[in-house]
Length: 534
Image (cartoon, rainbow, N blue to C red; front, side, top):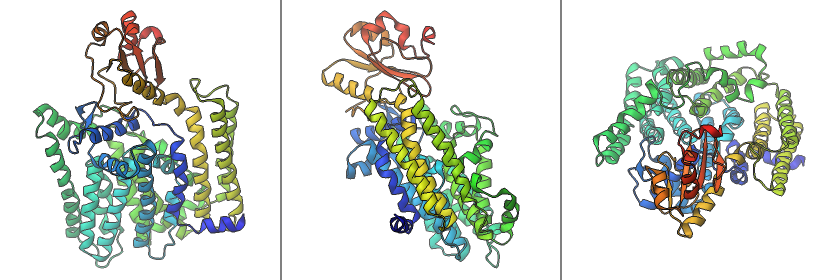
């Protein structure tokens, strides 16, 4: 066992994320975001329209196209499945771990790659690496930009500007101008964090800013190509409302400016738990002599402040901020090697063990999930096995580097949480049974429509050749098609009892309801929910 553990510990940090591969199939698709993005990529594949994105057959303007292009690329190689889509994000996560260490070595050649271990050990990062969303891909683009900035500032190599341009292009095509918020701090504050003599000139700063901004030009070219055939109202939606609206007064996830601050320690777990806080003030003074520490501050604080000022807030928006925190903490560890108390990780182990015991002893998972007893037992056994591995790994690694030991054990703890998340939360949100029934009904030739607000929950999962037609007046449609079925969605309330099948969502529900049931009780598919059922 010791020899096996010793051999595994010699693996580079990024390769440890491959342990996620078999677990990518444990979690069902997460509604509404993950199912929506999979459906957009699927519609792109079905229609062959690679420029203008569509959701339910309607132009979709919320996000740029890079993630959807990449999903179709990996589906071409690995066939279109949820697992293969998540493999793409896992590869991006591995790239993030590698590039985090690359940035650290450029800023501190004497570094031993601790920043990569610190990045790998972030539980929040690991848990999101297997979810089909934009932020891990954006994090990879941001880190590529950091590599270019550090190289250009340190050596003046003009080839680094080309790399910065490529990173900016990819980042803006991933999630829009938010990419520039992450790059702005390290670029604008380069004269402060750099140790180069003579100091970086403001001319060099302006050059980097111009190159990064020019990286947005291909995204503008895509935007023009996507909207030039649309009416002016839709074009304005893409070019103005979807960016300015989120910054000034978000129409989704609108939260107060301080909302991120109490969550910051959670996002950085387990490292805040392991820090010897009495030693932190002395270690924090490393910024005076470490350009890596100063760069970490510049890559973290300005972006965090900017995101606090933006009205729309979600925890995963901060994923690209985490590498800067890892680089900063790594600099502190070089200043004080005893800064981490790895033994405290046993407290986190204890918390997760208590959660596991609570989950096992609960009468039933959330909302009486429909998992078979044998599969539930299997998932609990998987979680227990990973917990045991984490504890053994933590015990056997007493003579290993503290950051690597903590990161490896934390990775196993994060993996152990995935089956519990499935059992206690996501199984109740699983819409795959609806997709299977929709596919069966469609194969039988049953007429089907969807309500106008349905957010593409089943398009990919049911492998629809085209989105279901929309019914502006579902009740009237049901009268004309009494043997039909309506795919109904609501942002609140409970699904109707007479539904053929349904699923609760984090907000609201989705259900397949027969036309006769809708005729008998029209309010059952009201988009705001049936008040009598609340």
